[in-house]
Image (cartoon, rainbow, N blue to C red; front, side, top):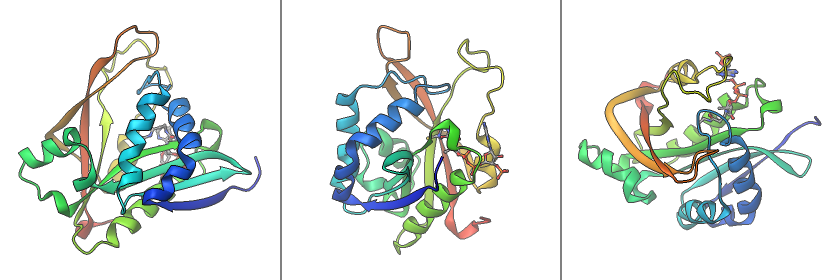
Length: 202
Ligand SMILES: CC(C)(COP(=O)(O)OP(=O)(O)OC[C@H]1O[C@@H](n2cnc3c(N)ncnc32)[C@H](O)[C@@H]1OP(=O)(O)O)[C@@H](O)C(=O)NCCC(=O)NCCS
């Protein structure tokens, strides 16, 4: 591992790293709890949302020229209907919220503090917009006894709480994807976590 280098991208600039980002998402989300059987077609649609929003943001870590970690965020108002809908139903002002997409790092680069850096970078970007008061992200809910759960799996919940996020009861979406080893996509329940930037402890 050489010294990592970092680069930020905004809005349409994200198009320029579509392929390494899609490959990284597919590699990292292959593992529990996502178990995502990725497809480049789906990735293309997903990433279009980011490239089309002038205020979206990608922060990426490179080892040499290889993208080994990445994190994204976007104003919630620019996200898809299935992400916005639970917030609208719960009465949140959509234009006050920034949505955090993935935070992904190849396993050999974990434990070096990049997970914290990814939150710092995204929160700084979100805070640069006067209207933004909250940040949020979602995580998949998998049963504790899921057969693909590795014995040494550590949920990220404590890390997220340490970063000032709490799961919001009832704030859920259903996303559909194909699980590794299955033949048809299934719905997954996603739990949203939020932070009020005014209460920031980190
Ligand atoms: C999320 C992720 C980017 C964090 O990267 P990281 O290198 O572990 O981050 P850091 O080194 O900053 O550590 C963050 C915290 O997680 C804790 N942690 C380390 N390894 C962990 C593990 N295997 N499981 C859970 N938490 C872990 C660390 O103790 C640290 O907490 P601390 O500040 O109290 O010490 C990385 O774990 C990852 O890519 N995970 C898979 C994808 C994923 O689930 N992403 C989140 C949803 S998109």
